[in-house]
Amino acid sequence: MTKDLFGRHRAVLPDWLALYYEDPLEITHGEGRHVWDAAGNKYLDFFGGILTTMTAHALPEVTKAVSEQAGRIIHSSTLYLNRPMVELAERVAHVSAIPDARVFFTTSGTEANDTALLLATAHRRSNTVLAMRNSYHGRSFGSVGITGNRGWSPTSLSPLQTLYVHGGVRTRGPYAHLDDRDFIDACVEDLEDLLGHTRPPAALIAEPVQGVGGFTSPPDGLYAAFREVLHERGILWIADEVQTGWGRTGEHFWGWQAHGRSGPPDIVTFAKGIGNGMSVGGVIARAEIMNCLDANSISTFGGTQVTMAAGLANLTYLLEHDLQGNARRVGGMLIERLRAVAAQVPHVREVRGRGLMIGIELARPGTDEAAPEAASTVLEEARAGGLLIGKGGGHSTSVLRVAPPMSLTVAEAEEGAAILERALRSI
Image (cartoon, rainbow, N blue to C red; front, side, top):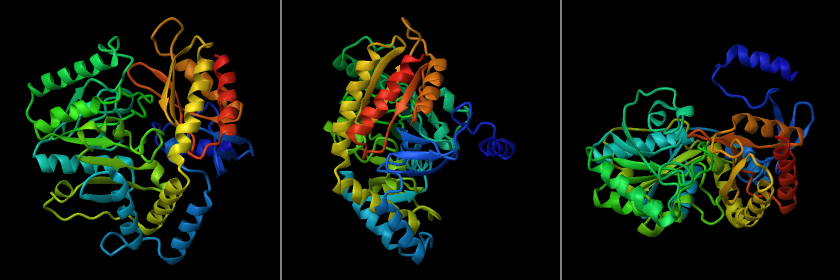
């Protein structure tokens, strides 16, 4: 049945629509931190639909909210008052730490980032954007144009002029040999030099932890130092929290808070985990920025009632059960467990991460050269052992991505680490 579905997939869907595994997997249902395939095989899920199933599969509180809302009305558009949208916007504004916050809902992180770029360029009257090397911000024409990861950037054409800044990757590049303080100073000096050679940009957009790029991050405080330089020139700071938001990093509710010394970002984008699988994204911005558009706009599917009900139930569950604290505790244990394993596997260059957002970078032993074939081997072996993980990387890297639902238990973390250990030793 799966082979037949694969054939049908290839016949009607684009060739560039990526699938994991030599024998692609059809997931039919899930519960908690586990999913099942069409053959009845059970897997511990350490990727959550690309960090989207944030709390748990089939979480009763979310499924109940979706079912009850679907029984009333699913959709009416933003042309009408929408109680679930207002209620979720109030909660998001409250937890955002942005003063006088306004919230606009979209259907994806890509659309959220496109909206943030629209707001920033309109507010600043500039189409120049600063972005980080190795970054990823979505698949639309606008967001591809600012993506600094060649593997996910199919065209150089763009409505924006994009200039790329150092700092998103700590252990590679010209400043990798520096200590954290000197690394930040060098990146700030590079930013200041870059700004001296261009017209005033609209904004800097940055992921606090680069997701598709392999879960890389700068030293804490880099973006705070950047913000001081940007603020002097009126340049906005957009924090792309599509993968890092809602407490996944454990230490903070938002990834930007590791760089919060100079205040919050001007704009924050979010998506993925807030809907726990439902299609929810959005933008948070100060009122003066959000309200700067001088033309009509709506969102046909952004803020639709059934997805808002899911988001509200999911956020409530996350806060009431302190899943941020769980990500910190269980994620910290999992990182240390994986580092102990990595010390005995020559192909592992680095285990990095925060909370339940962990990257295992693989390289050919004794070198810094990427080992994509090793990453593929581990992906397959982990699946054979009953574990689903992701992979990614840019800048000639190959990285295994580990990001389970944030309700992961200690026992499940130990089980997953044991499967990963066997898979890594199989290289």
